[in-house]
Image (cartoon, rainbow, N blue to C red):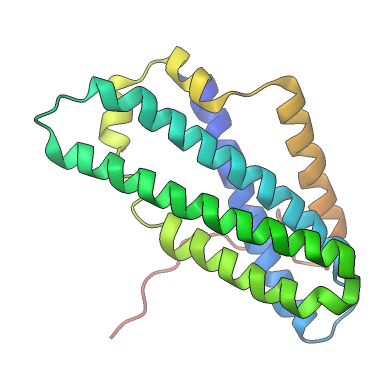
Length: 194
């Protein structure tokens, strides 16, 4: 199980790093510092592909897991159904963001403000909707999935791994100083008091 699961974790860690790099870059460029287009598009290309993979992987996970969970485990089936609902929302949000990316590619600087607004909405869904309850099925995945299941879920190929690495390198290269995916802080923050 370690190989496929570790690849899945690494993909998701890198996606988190790019997401946080993108957030930092959005704040940076909104303050009028430099040309944003290369960085914005590199982040968008990475996040669109990464989010599509995540959605597909999580759908496969639920499809494999659901028949193995006894019908009497209503809470677990409800958690899987809730995940399906979040994945539908994720797919809708991704489609909206993809349209905004294409508009930005076509319009260039004139479309920057619209792209930034769309990016804010997309990131809000990633962080506040999809990030919530991300481990609700972990007890089931540990007990019921084997390495071959994880290989089906992850669906990695040399081409997909190479393409992900190239997109990650482009984000790193285009990022403002100190805001690359390997430079941003991704430490979970404690909730604010009060």
